[in-house]
Length: 190
Image 1: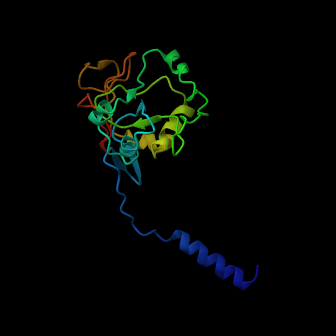
Image 2: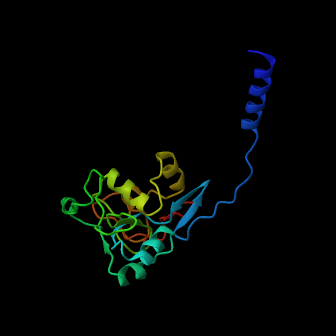
Image 3: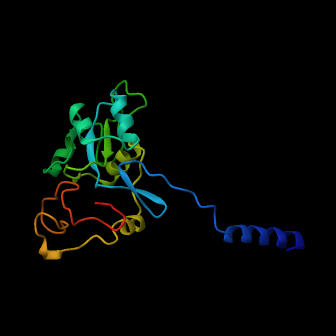
């Protein structure tokens, strides 16, 4: 290696070692800042929304949708108790390889991941469906590292779930999002 390569390599190494300019991360209203990542405040619920309702879809994608917005617009929550019921959505299969609702622009299967209080978190969906619902909502799934970080300080009552304020860690039925006052991480994720 000649002297020029050594100098260039030293400059590149030095630049990588310098701290990056601090960037102020602004999270959407439906999320909290966890380190350098925005994380949904509430566990996601999957909603079927007519893609032609661009106002509602835009509210979902900017983190400004409310439960009242969803209900008023006739959106359907997919917090199903029977896992086999997810097979009825032929344009949003378990593989995540969705087909667009005819005429939707941009193309969409009409399923979106939403962070709102007062609903059952979605279950009985595959990683592929969850990933696609997040992408359609302008979000992404957290990595395990990010999820573990966001859950820091969340109390684990174990078998001592009091049924109203503590986190649900056992049992078949999840609690509605945001309904357990003592179940919140140090970052504010509920």
